[in-house]
Image (cartoon, rainbow, N blue to C red; front, side, top):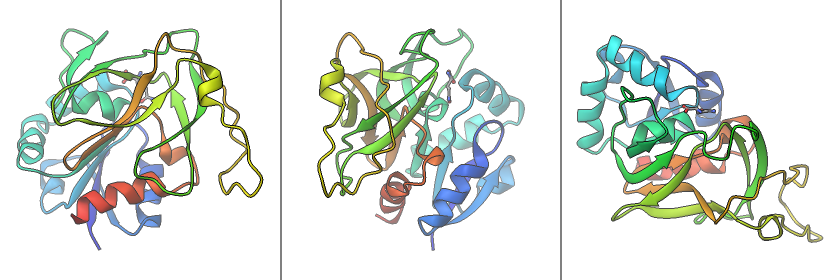
Length: 221
Ligand code: GLN
């Protein structure tokens, strides 16, 4: 079994550990330097990227983690974790740092202040058995991808484009209401670069293990 750490300075740690274990990994909360050794992968959870950035500096974890990621440690960031993996952050705090693991420009709180949270089914490239129920909470979007960054999922500009007609025999959880706002254009919410994965949404808040399994496949490769 691969051992996957979940960065536990702040944010949504327990649910990620439960999902990773459900998907077949051993897990460990990571708060100090000794805990990042001999990991096969790392998850950076949702939470607040400005606080996470600050705490990474306080706990002297930023540089060692940046080094490990540069050497190829597979990392998955959800929401605030996505922001932490970006090479460029828009609407961030001036002192906010990120790892630059995925060539992309991310905009914080991008869907607008009036839209605190919403749900939308995402056609996630590489996941079988239909769309993924995306849960978005003060979520970022990816405004631009750089070289080598593969787009795995988008929220469509038109609600008609994202609300999926429910077909009979559909295996997907049909209880997800599509409450997505209409962005001005299609907005990227899931990407991958090599063995680094990022989503704007929170798969750990669903019962659907597919995104965590997808990440574990990157870890095993
Ligand atoms: N808005 C938060 C940030 O900028 C992210 C929200 C979340 O992780 N749910 O870090």
